[in-house]
Length: 115
Image 1: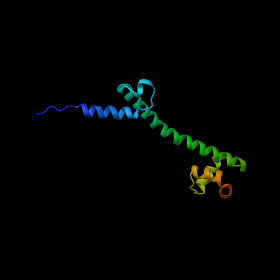
Image 2: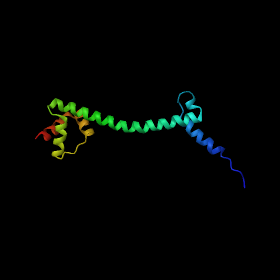
Image 3: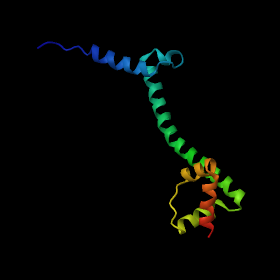
Image 4: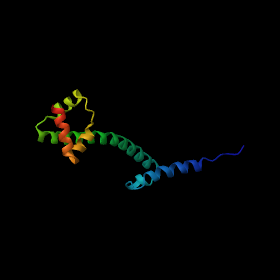
């Protein structure tokens, strides 16, 4: 039986990792073991960053809606409670866009909730 060399597979694996590490600092973009470690850490940070992005955007939406409601003399927590009681199902993202881009529509929603 013929001996099988694992060279091409290893080279392909190394090339893939080094391509992912392109642009990293010093030996992290040139040496395979350092590059592999850097790529793994970068993947972990990217995963965590995707979760943080959702959290940060939700905080932004809440802040925007709260600021718009403060001008109307309504507290954010009461507004959300009244929306749930009245079964108005608009999420915070849509409310924030309405408050920012369409203030008249947002005013109508606030009046509807206040009744």
